[in-house]
Image 1 (cartoon, rainbow, N blue to C red):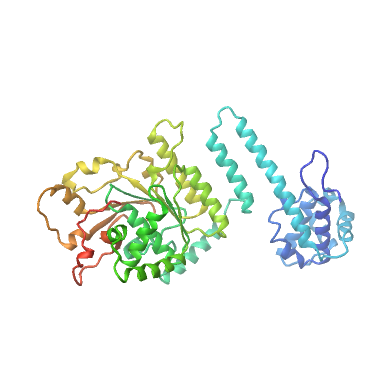
Image 2 (cartoon, rainbow, N blue to C red; image 1 turned 135 degrees about the vertical axis):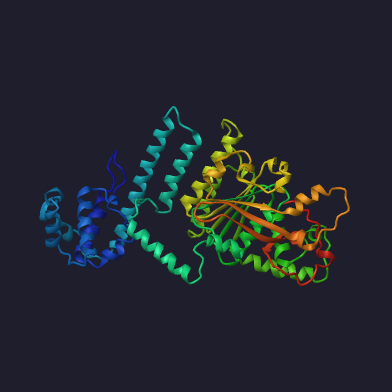
Length: 471
């Protein structure tokens, strides 16, 4: 078997010949083989590529396949002489005793193709590395993408037929007409109504000043998605996994977070927490609390995660954008943050997953007392490119926080309604309207909820909350 020749690329011409011969003997086997070999480029010899294309064209048209018909197709295409004439087509059929092992031959051909592709990828990386203007992270990024594409069998033509895309849209519209969300559910009625769920490839920036509850809302959305069976990957750059899960259990069990942290455990609390922990163990919510992580690293981690979990990844949460490590030779911090923002958008688009990234607002929002501390797009800290890259920008506004600053040192007894009042301001929505959504924030259990117009009864003392919350 003449598989290798000195100085040549990996190949198996014999396997190509035996495969084509087997198909000519049993055309029905082509259906199974076409699931293994996705492109004619997987064949090393051009003449075998031509024969494969002729076989595939006949198969897709439902026409009979035999050496005479294949020869006629190649002749009409002006390729019969190129492959060696009718004699070559008949010799293919006679080269193998039966079609029994065509899938095995297809596997060999595919393996050689992958090895050749690896060599091509390495050659490209080598050439990029030798470029005097090469940027290390960009070269690494391109190299990793090539390897990732090969590993996930995603090397393919990227051009899409508009008609096929239209069919996908009609299918999506059909699901929407039945009340189904086209994107990842958030667990919040008005947010779902506005967005129809968090959409694949969207970058959503959730921004606020400290103590407004950014992390709490992100955790709530992540958990709500996981409850609906969505696979969620939560990158916690600020808190470790234990702290994050503590908040999740507090929210799920309705147990005061402060009590939990200080060990004030009441008689029924352990049973409740155990039950909720068991529920949590069944949900596809994953936490990565790595520190000093760059956007480049997040993309790599998500690629590996998606491959490891059978291509399942429905939501990525990053807490938070300004905590991400920036490139060492970045011109300044704003440039570094801008690069990370663009990389998160690239992550969303490449992996076809919504990315919810938390961000800090600058202090300007606190210097506008007339507006009551209501944030606006210009308040995004470190880089205006965050707004540009984002498909949606959300702000959390809780009037109680600003009011508390004004009343500092004064006797003050805000109502329960005032303590819990919160707004999600959708300041940018690339594919829909902006809006202001009223929510409730139950700080004692770090939980945002849909706003209710009436309150059945005030909380007991263990559930009281001053409005102060660090998150």
